[in-house]
Image: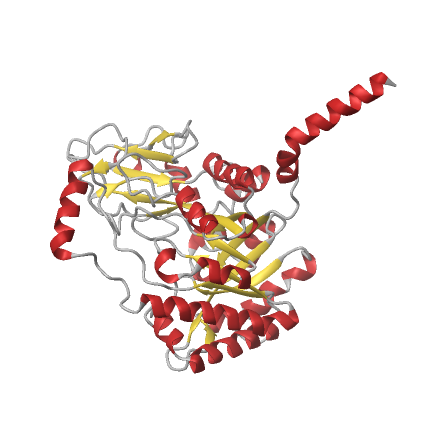
Amino acid sequence: MKFFILFTTLLVGVLGANISNISIANNPAARLICYYDSSSFSREGLGKLTTTDLEPALQFCSHMVYGYAGLHNDNSKLISLNQNLDLDAGKGHFRTITNFKKKYPHLKILLGVGGGRDENPEKYLSMLEASVNRMAFINSAHALVKTYNFDGIDLGWQFPPNKPKKIRGSIGKFWKGFKKIFSGDSVLDEKAEEHKEEFTALVRELKNAFRPEGFSVSLTVLPNVNSSIFIDVNAIVNYLDFVTLAAFDFQTPTRNPKEADFPAPLYELNERNPEHNVNYQVQYWLNGHCPATKINVGIAAYGRAWKMSSDSGITGVPPIPETEGEAPAGLSSLTPGFLSWPEVCSKLPNPSNSHLKGADAPLRRVGDPTKRFGTYAYRIPDDNGEHGMWVGYEDADTAGNKASYVRAKGLGGIALFDLSHDDFGGRCTGDRYPLLRAAKARL
């Protein structure tokens, strides 16, 4: 009897000490949100993501955000940004995508709005100012969701992004502060407070319209959007099913052409903007009384690549000075300064490129044993000052690290931006969707 009591006491103590870890580690409700930009269907060559290539990912995804829809220029109604693809009679992508729910009944599919893909971002602020425009948007959104069997709407609202900032040491920070006495801060939006209240009203009205039929409303905070300016976290969270923080692209060769650095560090780095990391963005929403379980952390399935110059140094340790903007485009994504994960992977040392020189020579990979900042790879310029490159990116290790961070913090889940930039064809290691798999395994 004494042995039984002692054993029970020890068992309760062990379980009590580890109950939080057990509840998080075995959380079946953890989200894995997969973004799918349908423009990838229109690419040529290896970058084209067909619905056949898409399907192997769906077993891992709890949600898919299919994009993109946007605002009509004249009346604020929600419309597809690729109507020839999405609405084609009998074989439109809207119906093809939502039909996947028959085979994968666990999957929720949301229609993505904006997402940085609408070519006229100014209308996203102006439409908020009139209740008649908000109602036109809500009615048209409800009609699209119901007609094409989506489970709801994800608002990737196109608020103006922050101005890029140069990385500064203490002297630079002092001088910038001195100059602000005379010049002041640049203003992103003269009517920011009004737009913040109006956006809250839009989300509230949209959720109230969707609630009777159980449709979801979620929010994606796009890269470099300052939540404190445009979003009243405390007022809005009760009307959102969840929020995804696209906490990456803090540094890009387009925004920061002269200085390369980690695009998506998990924690703050020395002498950097304290807001430019995942942990700061998460903590801001937690401080605004957003439930942790509503927050998802976004991961970019691509790298940002700068061209190194002869004055960029030889160590590769960021920040890299005197860069020359965007590195050449990859063969699949065809976007300067942007490399999908399989494009990055093909540039890392492997038997097929070990003997190559010049622009085809392999990059040197530098991992992140601290699990705090990210992975990068680089190639210093040759004697003629050519072919230098520095790229910061996510791989399976860093994707797993961010999923572990989500689990340790008790957050809602991970979101991948997007499936077309993961290795959906298994070209690198033979495994399809390695970043998605790594995140899933650690959740």
